[in-house]
Image (tube, rainbow, N blue to C red):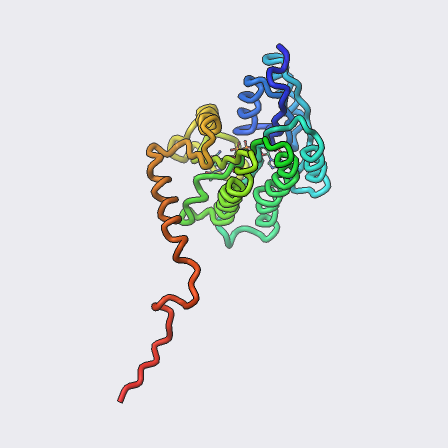
Length: 268
Ligand SMILES: NC(=O)C1=CN([C@@H]2O[C@H](COP(=O)(O)OP(=O)(O)OC[C@H]3O[C@@H](n4cnc5c(N)ncnc54)[C@H](OP(=O)(O)O)[C@@H]3O)[C@@H](O)[C@H]2O)C=CC1
Ligand SMILES: CC(=O)[C@H](N)C(=O)O
């Protein structure tokens, strides 16, 4: 089968889990693929299967996105390859330990992958998309972005950054024809759990990765800005976001609010 769209999607973290399923689904939609991750063998296996099943073209870019030189090569591809019309910022990592147990290097590595790489890749592709007046960026955040009480503070903070960045880019780039989606998966069966030191079997049942990606793609096709596949009642998110917007006109004031004024009481 020939490629149906002649468009290409670049997917980071495509060697396993959510990224590998996105690769499968976009190939079935006729997109050519650029797969990015560290594990070339797994990406080659995925590429061979997908080529055979769908006939699309698949390129592999082996890169550790926390290594600036390797990240730069992916940025360059995004800047120059005009066939790439969708970027999926999916590569990410977590760590099961608490804040005080995490070393500064561990923290820096998570920030480097979950925030710096994702932001730089978005920044590399956005000007070209704006020039074309077309393009889409899918950013994989997490439901943990909404749950500071969860105890995964650094991971959750990186995912809150991804949510904010996506909402901000939606506002900035939406009017220029660019679609930006933040996907907030809740717990999903992938290798991230084992990689970050959790025993998935000890947790309550979680969503299967195919279901997660198929649901996220329904949100993509609807052009949702924020997609939370597990949330049964979308109104809850809408109410949450509306509460934020109600507050906005009150944030800028000349004087501090009354409750912060010093009370100088003169008694006599
Ligand atoms: N599974 C879940 O419960 C949830 C996952 N998410 C998010 O989904 C995204 C995908 O994770 P998921 O599929 O679950 O887990 P996986 O561990 O299966 O996938 C992570 C992917 O990121 C790649 N990756 C990891 N580190 C690097 C690196 N330094 N450079 C380049 N690529 C890297 C891995 O490939 P390789 O090792 O070959 O480099 C792999 O392809 C992440 O952003 C995660 O935070 C969000 C909410 C819930
Ligand atoms: C807790 C995790 O590590 C998981 N990836 C999630 O975002 O829920």
